[in-house]
Image (cartoon, rainbow, N blue to C red; front, side, top):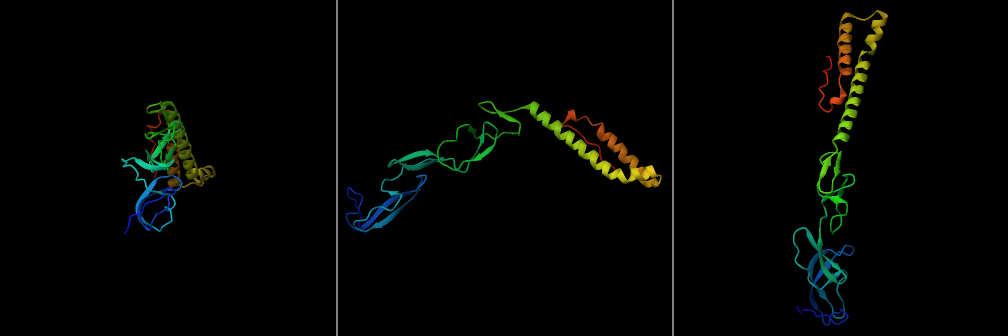
Length: 196
């Protein structure tokens, strides 16, 4: 099959095949090469050029912009993290990493960016650990109170059985042990075992 040449208007001088290099209509990213059959007087398919893209290395892509191929960074599919709050962000467009992001993942929810790396705000983490421990303490006491409520009523009415009175004593001792837990030791707290 004859190879096609194009005139100054980009139309085929004669019918034949021509290698074209296609690119995405929105991003301009190279999508592939193909041999296209052009009839005399017709031009190239949309979003295609006869100029071959440059060879690119891993992490780069050829982009058709301003009638020339440009090599730009391609981080699509990678996750970066906001240096303001550590929030993850999936890269969906070509180009350099967005400003105010890093590829380094914060180790905790209390990390702050110091310009080069994440540094854990130990004070904020400690306060959160203590708040979690206080919440756990309240939850355990609430569960124990719910468990013992009927027995306490029976005790006040003088109708509690000996077995239930013994269970009530164990649970009340458990509540005392939970109340005695120092939540400022969080997160290194060993909670008392619930009675059986």
